[in-house]
Length: 240
Length: 145
Image (cartoon, rainbow over all chains, first blue to last red; front, side, top):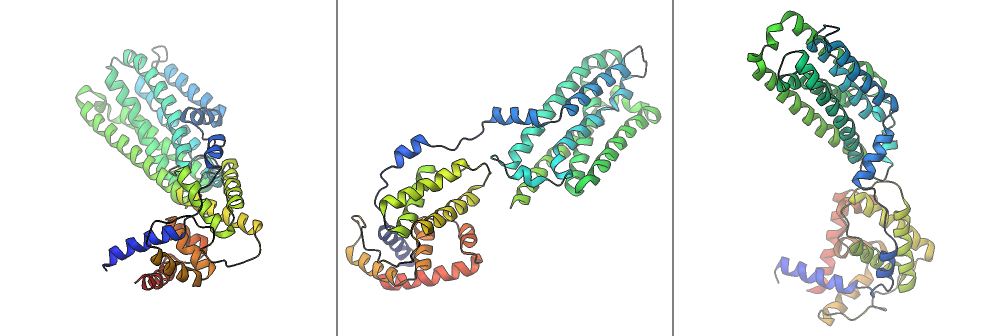
């Protein structure tokens, strides 16, 4: 008798040998009792409440600050104002790495949902809110800076995504409260880079350099995407 | 959560039945096991959940039936479709196994519990557990031949 055939026969025989009488109350039990799972909308609603009020307030304050700085009355120019967008990203990164910074990840692990779902939901909530703010900033800045919507959007989004990617990398690598100054430093660095470019390389903000900015934006988006995937994977490994 | 609740109910019930040898009590323990999971607020991936269910079911079975008895498997088992001679030989061989070994065969070969879960349930490395299981299966195969 062949080995595989023998194994199948043994498997079948074992299934028969261990056959139990059919359960009598299974259907009624499963009909009456189910584990209550959180739906996606419910999870998002919980995460909206979890994000601290001052993160929302600071995001709105930064939005107002950028508008104020870029307004023709202030005359600082939209690109100076855009140097504030890294701080929006900093808020997002710090809120996502909050449990890690306080070394309280196990609290997030002891919940009904997979931790990566929770983190992803929080990223989606804050990320979409910030994208909405940046989208709200684009038309006035485009008008005041006499640049097109696409150019303005690229100038605003590139430092945001770059800071988000750097911040997520740092929160993965630096444990505890040290990651706050590290991420703050990264945001300041990106912000200063923007100010430096405006002052010393203003030609980079001309329309002919838009493809270069497009490339920078694509790279920043790729890096941020990769960091999100790495962060989610790492969080699952921590659980294991 | 990628588990088929109905399928897992049957498997946990079969496990309880072969520990308690009593249909009613096995079903009570199975339902208590699932109720505990339904009431639990902690997320568990598939393997962790299987480990949790079997651990809870095992403990509840011990609570239910503390005296360690080793009854032959032939009692109260419903009609079977395979060759009766084959079954008799296999049953005789299964009866000769120790209770933990018989349980291991049930969990791995009938309930198809992953080795990763079994290694945590038995507190043995996968390698050691696979070697132990292969030894048991070899004996059973010889009995069938």
